[in-house]
Length: 249
Image (cartoon, rainbow, N blue to C red; front, top):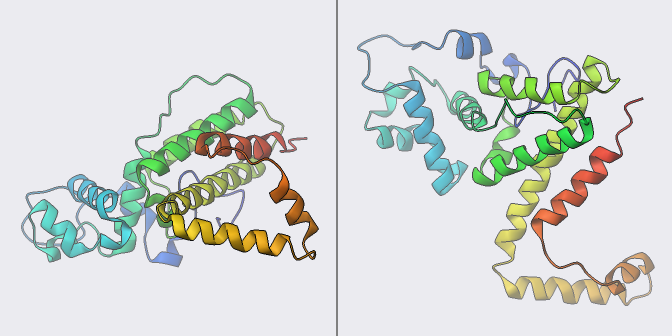
């Protein structure tokens, strides 16, 4: 969450202050030239960022190091520091890079709940394509151009409400936090599903707890018919509860 609700927002990112991470957003986004001296390299900031994203997509965020990214673009690691002086800056670039996949020119229906749910689904789709993204959001500290473009789209979806500017940003921040948390859970559950033994052990444990007489609420829930596993339907139910329950009065 942004430390200043109502002045900054999340998109598929977490808002924050430049001082918290050492990243100067004006230098990063408005003056994107090289920060170092010497001979101009044979690659661009966009190529570096795309290489880092491809590495994270293939192997996870922990695999993204300056050395590994440099190897992908065929450069020495030290030359990358002219564009991204540290991994924090590289993460800023990566998050904004993939945010460019979010559509910003879709037609809004005018029904803000419908449109806000659409925003949430777009965010979820992006995070499922780039599964490192939910984890990267906590380190995000600034809003790049692609992030800002989608923010404008989301704020337009909320225009029919009677919310003031600060409240709109808070709603959007809450939505993004929900989506990131839910997708992180989806990813972890998908990984755990590969271990049938673990799932069976968890089921036995919960059945034993429910039978001890001290957890009647849990016993009632476990006795009810379960829903078939359907990630899309589960996300839609949660999203409906979140958005439909918002008070914009």
